Amino acid sequence: MTMNKMPESTNIMVVDDTPANLKLLQEMLQAKGYLVLTFPRGASALKAAAKNPPDLILLDINMPDMNGFEVCERLKADEVLKDIPVIFISALTETADKVKAFAVGGVDYVTKPFQFDEVNARVETHLRLRRQQLELQALNELKNHFLGMAAHDLRTPLCGIMGISELLANQLSPLPAEKQFRFFEMLLASSRFMAGIVNDLLDVSAIESGHLTIERRMVDITVPIKQSVEINEMFASPKNISIAINCQEQLPQVYADINRIEQVINNLLSNAIKYSQPGTDITVRLRHENNEVIISVADQGPGIPEKEQHKLFHAFGKTSVQPASKEDRSTGLGLLIVKKIMEAHEGRLWLYSEAGNGSEFFFSLPVTP
Ligand SMILES: Nc1ncnc2c1ncn2[C@@H]1O[C@H](COP(=O)(O)OP(=O)(O)OP(=O)(O)O)[C@@H](O)[C@H]1O
Ligand SMILES: [Mg+2]
Image 1 (cartoon, rainbow, N blue to C red):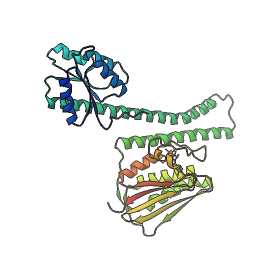
Image 2: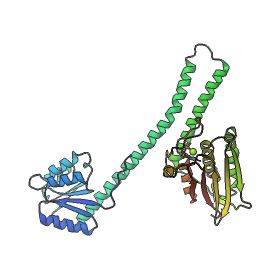
Image 3: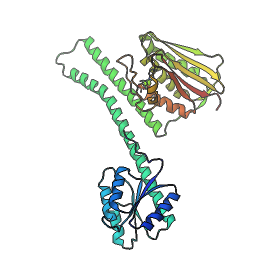
Image 4: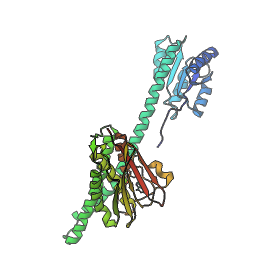
């Protein structure tokens, strides 16, 4: 995925066959902090633009060899250069010329003699519009990427459901009850798998559009944690994984949304179970330090290589660490949801993990509102 961003310093190209105009515009724009490149001819400007595309072009109309309209048409025909805003500079007294300036793809015009405040206002406006256009493009790419990943993850279980349903529908004679039961189990597992992804997607979508609601109160944090441990033990014990709670005595209450915190701990515990080998231990630790309670989930799993840790907490941020069992799903949404919930709580979130040495995920909650 490419992310288009306006460079740190803004490059403006000025093309005019009158040296005095070039000098004047260059001085004016440089005083505003722009990097300005000047060209007396259209052909040399086009060549330079192709090599290093500027952020905006100020373009004279009446020039020898190639006039400004033609230069602009060539820019617009170029896949890479076509979106650079072009502002014409001319003694545009003829309405026909003004109309043509827009017809060939110009976004605006400034007239000679220059009123610097006006030139600057127009340049700034078009740079801002261009920046917004680039931001929207990047967001759109991100959204497409997101949709593609979601569709890809949903397709596998959906194909499973379709395959099994077809098989059942095409059976001429009834299947033995045991085989039938096995097929229904598979249907249920695939449907659950899909429902899990859809729920996470709905959560991410609510979060991204700013609709994550948290209702914070002073609460005993051990309640949602014990509840989450109890639920997750159902998934851990078949794998012979134990979950221990190691809680400091007289833990103060924290200011948090109990349901959201349960979601956080559920995600961390389900990861710890999913990525660890059978027969290992998980420890949930709670301690009071300064003005916060720090909660952590430690496992004896494979650990996450340091150079891959930057992938965590992003949508579909999977690493090379795969679930220990083929039956488990991995979408890469869980930790993003965790991060967003923690942000809404103004809490901290971090991890210690090393390839081969397990992982410990930490989060903190304030003990006062
Ligand atoms: N405890 C852990 N041990 C090892 N790797 C982990 C652990 N937790 C997360 N990971 C790695 O980080 C990635 C992102 O985790 P995350 O919880 O966001 O997504 P997921 O578990 O793949 O899918 P889901 O959306 O169902 O949670 C995982 O794919 C895995 O590679
Ligand atoms: Mg997860």
